[in-house]
Image 1 (cartoon, rainbow, N blue to C red):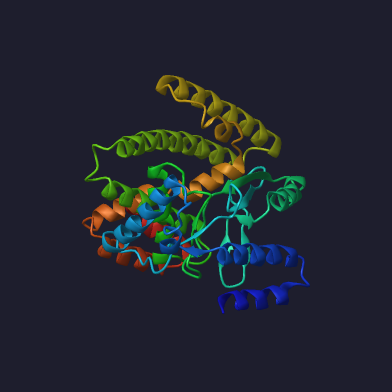
Image 2 (cartoon, rainbow, N blue to C red; image 1 turned 90 degrees about the vertical axis):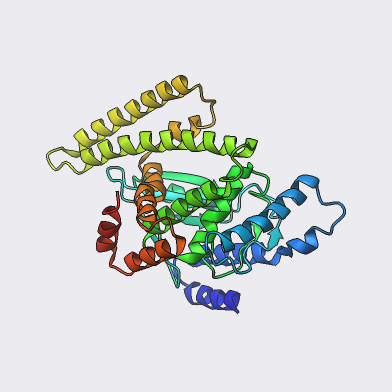
Length: 344
């Protein structure tokens, strides 16, 4: 029935310029859902690879933990498995003006507006990205391992992420299930930062009794790297935003400041990488940093400390925390962010 509703919306939009987008979105989502198989049945297959078997069993344990310990409405999400036969679930494009850190938004029937646009074909995503590049936007295209339909469908476990590192899988599932708890239209930063905060808090709780495990040590090392990188990029984002918002600067001067700040970011990253003796896993991400990727990072990370502070102010009680987040979410967008920023 839900797919039928989406199809009706698709037909209604078929004559407009975005008809092709809705067509691929419907077909891609339908394909993902039609490939679902119940995990309990998949586990009965004799030829199931041992690593996949172990992870699917692990997912079922995480679901129970998310429901019982984190108070998340897991429903029937992640009780099925879909092998898409490709490395990514879809490809998102992110865009921001040349001299602004304001994310481009795309709006859809029922779902509202998002700071990204997803395609089930990389070629389609690159084609759309080129449209924005020609308009002078900074653009980023990224493969996405998983996404949430925020309870609209019962999302399956995907081959695209099932064999990633254990800490990554724990965070990812808690993040996506958090979207089923609280989601408000037209505010990507609020939604994504909330889900990121829940995934961090949930992961810490999950590993609380597993502090001697190699997976926990891997998780902590990842958190230390991520914290350092996020802070580094957000610091330079602040400098860039100050230059863009400076009315005394001409566009040419803003471009010069942008070039200088981005070069300084690259140099700061090289020094940090050398000092921490990191490998090359972040080189491409930092090396291709632009307004679009900076805006996206902010959409997922800039408000996380505020949500963490709100959790602490709630006595680290999940039910109180969720209620306070819901109360704040009912405010209009500007007062909503102001209320959240009060928690430091």
